[in-house]
Amino acid sequence: MPSPIFSSVSATTLRAWLNDGAEIALLDVREAGQFGEGHPFFAIPTAYSQLENDVPRLVPRRGTRVVLLDAGDGVAERAAQRLAALGYTQLHVLAGGAPAWAAAGYVLFQGVNLPSKTFGELVEHAFDTPHLSAQELQRRQQAGEPLVLLDGRTLAEHRKMTIPGATPVPNGELALHWHALAPDPRTPIVVHCAGRTRSIIGAQILRSLGVPNPVIALENGTQGWALAGQQLEDGSPRPAPAPRAARAQDQAAATALAAEAGVPQLDAAQAQAWIDDTTRTTYVLDVRSAEEFAAGTLAGARHAPGGQLLQATDQSIGVRHSRVLLLDDEAVRAPVVASWLWRLGYETATVAGGIRAPLRLPAQPEATPAIPPLAKQDLAAWVDRHAPLLVDIQPSLAYRQRHAAGALWSVRPRLAAQVQAAARADQPVLLLAADASTAALALAELPGRTLQWVLAADWHAAGLPVESTPDSPADSEAIDYLFFVHDRHDGNLDAARRYLDWETGLIAQCQPDELTGFRLPAAKARGERCASIV
Image: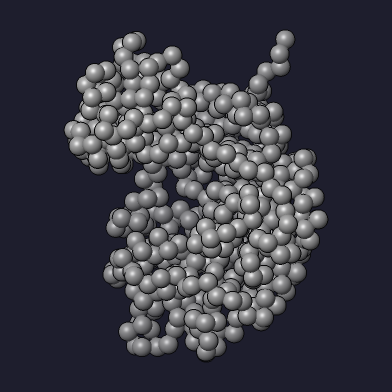
């Protein structure tokens, strides 16, 4: 008898595995909206709709112990079949999925990036991070008091909305650029984000480097600014700082910070030994800006800009108790980010030579469709001839705004059942997708059917009929979208209040085994918060 592809495990067994010190990847294969409404603390979002694209990046070692979690609806079993075909050999499914986790008495956390955001709250307690209110910042600005206001988020987030006058400097870039922006040590530096985490971590990055300026986190970021009745700036034209040569002082400070945390710098041979160790998972991440990464990096390295790596670690690192090698090209950003990733609980190192180190890394190909898309000039004739069932697999909110007239909206885990219910047995199916890789994965769900696909943008460009359905799919059906998080950025002040309450309440929801991996100095406030949940 052939061995089964996967085994089922109970919630109590999974909890024990998460704490046994060995590598494990807990992959939540529900869609983004479902994940965000409630998941285990250490779950990694790997939606079934993008499974084969995301998992090889997040779990590169095929022998890793993997546990798949769903809504108790069979999607995890389907995901196990897909991953087994990619060569994964230690596959397990949480029996009963997320409902079974809750039934065992364990918390399902709302939101995203739980470990990173909880870490930010703990950092504030541990280091007593100074902060100021939106009202006080506005008072200082209006009084003309000198200060440097830095937006520690991505440039795209800064462009959407920011505090008036802020300069975009993503947190991972702070160590390299702070001096040029605030050369007078008497000038306060204020770091803001949209909420709390990146304000706190950005301020603490600078404080940990011994920056002589007063460094302060803006309390509650852009949301706190809006809740105070103050106007945000939309469409800021200010650019992020251009790449600059590192100062010797900054290199020394970064080296000292990494050494204090116990983060080693490996030579090429030592780093290659980590990479070649088939019993451990090692991530090799370039923490520089997107522009620098695009201009050239170590072949096979992944891009994970340092600020976002600390803010959303679960989007780059999928294996608990794994190793991480960080690269830059100036010996400032990588050691600084590494020191904070170590505090987050990861076995972390930098590499001598950074992106120029002579390392050999495996490539990770992405899925591509087995059939080419229909050309837009052929679309109208093909549709007229075959009268296909039109199925739009774009994100749900894009579908609401505009889609092919009469098209059904679907998402990969529901696609086969919806097509079976809506199409005749011999009716061709035309998928409309936002990109080729999403189409490739969706096509695999419909074996035995006559299939074609097209980029949704090409349908529109061909001048074929389109329509908008602002209320369809309904919020309850748009399982790919997390309204809980996104509404706060669209002027919904109630959503902003709920989000900030959620963020400040994270520690109180945690059990001790969900907090023990963080490496932070003892703090009275932290101890009291943790003691209250034992």
